Image (cartoon, rainbow, N blue to C red):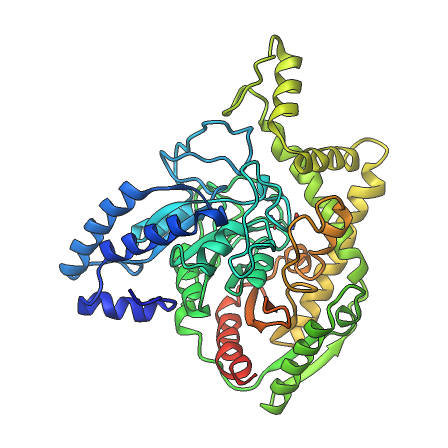
Length: 478
Ligand code: GLN
């Protein structure tokens, strides 16, 4: 079986009949089994995927296959799929099964995607290394001594190791882009509100977005085009019409690109990441792009602002796991307080507890103004700055991560060091703008690096077109 990394190629072969969906599903099932030690999948839907492959093959033969006919997809385990278990990689959801499918999933299924399983992640999507899963860490397929990034580590590795064609993740502060960068794949965080969050387990609702992992920007555009758009079940889903992203991928000549000068001066930024970013900017200049360095006055505040606001929202969102509504209940639950206290004590992992406590603290009387309100104000400054720069420039470019994937356990005892891993990704979430991580080759440790591109709200099409240009014309020259 060919290693398909472009859906256009796969579709052509499916249409010609040189491959069929059954073969594809068997191929991925074999690979999932052979790579089980990566711990990317929490559950594999083998029987169902085979059944659905048969149905989709019949549709392709009859000439009425959907736009995703033959695309085998894995779902991060915080996205609802009706009749299937859902854990958010936490013990607290126990044996809970989704009663409905996320809107994004419904839309993929309506175009004949084949869902092959659910993917490991950090518990409730909190983390940058996938070491916070109640079901063990995911390993980076490029070097199994290293983390895949997080929180959508399973989704990134599943695509990296070709255990499925594409996957969905969620991005609240970088959880799609950072693992995409560590694993050498494309990871897209759409504009806030572009994809419905109906059926996504809420972490921090003013940041959360669902997005795809793929090998090519073209396929990210295709998946976005299908998933995006208004949804009666999510009032925060934008009403703005969905652009024909797949038709906007041709880079329309040299454009204006901004980069953040002081981002490249951050302590902890790997020298090679800096050099590669600067080289890319030089190449763009040589191709006629107008490249401008700007100072980002708030760079030291992005991580604190993100963590104050996201933990505040998490403390509220996670209050629903009380031993009554969902899944797990402590054996030592004899009255209401012991039900709440013991269920939450036993059911949540350490990082989730840390964030609930931090979030409750920043929202508490006496500290609300000092932390939460202040962080809201700083968020506005960061958003205004970002939008202003993007008014004058088509794209903003910066590294996705300060360095390539780190060793397992390297940051596990140091939450602050772990939080600082998100320094380059949280800006896009705070500002609500779309962002993508594009693989830019491997570093001296032979580990993947990613370059991040940010664009104006709802300009995912041009942003992915530029990403494709970077991959095919700029990075391929290195
Ligand atoms: N790494 C970030 C965090 O720990 C981002 C998580 C996310 O995007 N879900 O919160």
